[in-house]
Length: 189
Image (cartoon, rainbow, N blue to C red; front, side, top):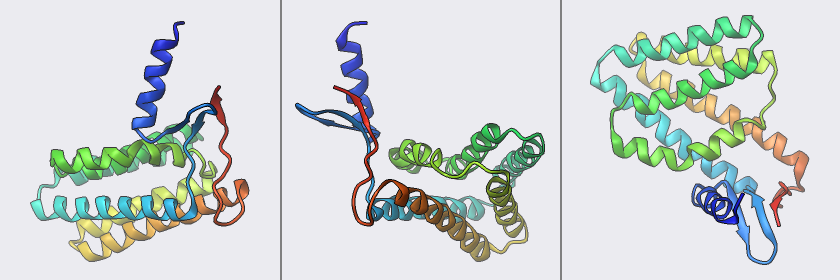
């Protein structure tokens, strides 16, 4: 394979924030400090809770029904032991929150952090207990929405995101000393 398509692909990954290109050193998987992790989770919370409020204010039941179907499928897939499919459905739930707004500007803004969030989620523990708890939290968010308890649903979603941040912070601490960047590894030279 020629170097040009590889170089173009790496530049695209750099533009998406997934790699860091260091001249004369190589290309590395993106690194996050604890502050970076906190900031990306804060942005996620603002996007997702805002989208939830917006979708509920519109009053259409279709977005909640679609999200409920995802949660139901995830519960069944968890019973089957397919954690990879659970992860995919979990991500569809969160992207579905944003998509439910129909707001192309919000969707585009969220996509700026979406790929980094997808990458980070692969660092979270993939255990039936953790995945089952995420599904229960999703169900609780939707139950609160159905009951018209918007503030409680938003509070639950914020807690769900903070829980993910906490789990990720524990994983990050394995790779680095507090306050330092983890060494995530060289991709190319």
